[in-house]
Length: 132
Image (cartoon, rainbow, N blue to C red; front, side, top):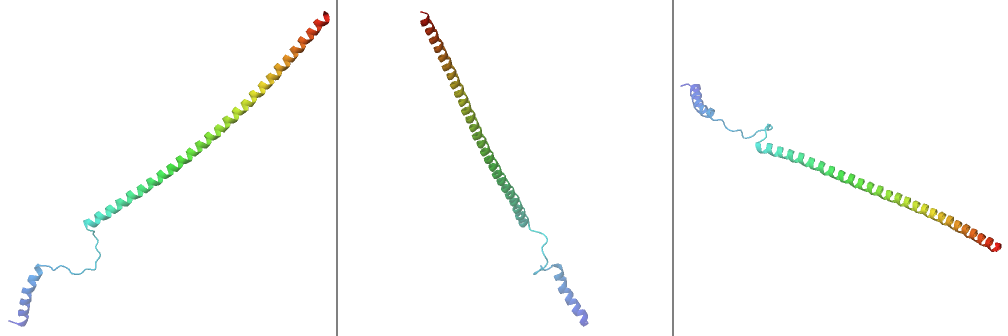
């Protein structure tokens, strides 16, 4: 057999066995394009957690804003009630002074009438005394 035939035949016998099974790659520099199911689940859960956290923070902020508005409204109503109370108090004081003035005027009027009646009676008595 010739040298070429002998070499070719021996190499064919060796390569035919190695062609049937492919050896795994030991080293790769290519980027992985697909995530494993565990990584995909972790990413999904992280995203859901972040979304829920953001909504909770928004809810807390809204609750604080509503509480501040309610507090401000309560203070405003309290101020209005105090103002109304002062207004009513002022009206009552004014009415009291008005009634007090009317009473003093009526008193003076009655006093004047009594004085006039007394003078009239004194005049009648003096006139009756003079006639006698």
